[in-house]
Figure 1 (cartoon, one colour):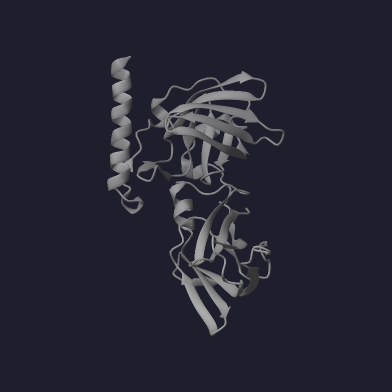
Figure 2 (figure 1 turned 45 degrees about the horizontal axis):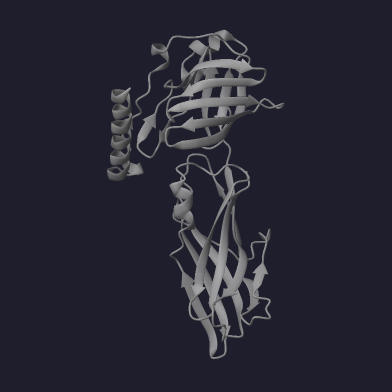
Length: 306
């Protein structure tokens, strides 16, 4: 038992050492996963088929007691999962509409609950913490011969675009000594897409008071016309967007004052998830736009809509 514990600790230390010293661009290490041919087939199940993994938009096929990759992807920043590598084994039914398996990349037991539409809701007790995602059906295996076809011959569905909304949803004035009467002006957002093109929103006005009587807080929604909001579509295979900038112009007593915030950690937060946001999932971050005894704060939200 002690040796097993030490081996597991050594494996985790090696994993973190690799993740620190190797960047995603340099990820050339093959994942330590067996190929499909080396894992004995088990019993077929009622949910055998091909599925999209909601968190990473990659496909796996569940068939005969195991699940293997159809698409390649990079796991934990540095490990390459290749087609036909086994990512789950000992897949079996535990109860009506409930299945369990060993998730090899996440190093824990996975529990699957089948929904009425065929989607599998997955919870994994992973070695580095719990993980949750969905498996969305693509192509059920009606013909057992399909399991023996080369990956290029398996019918596939096109990978969908990912769409995000990026916007400021709260503007507020905060501070212990509120000597300034108000902050008002307008702001816009911009990012750079994977091809190096700038995507810029329109301008949106705001007006928050800094007195204790307020109102010291203004709530905004995503604007479909692009005022202070961005709708960003990321095609399949692209990395997304970068260089998030918030431009603000304050209507100051001495004239317009332009402020630029290009130090936001919002996109870094998203990157540190090490996966794509799920549809409907969002992250946010509070940005300090103007400092002083009365601070102007924006809360910025990134939401994946599809």
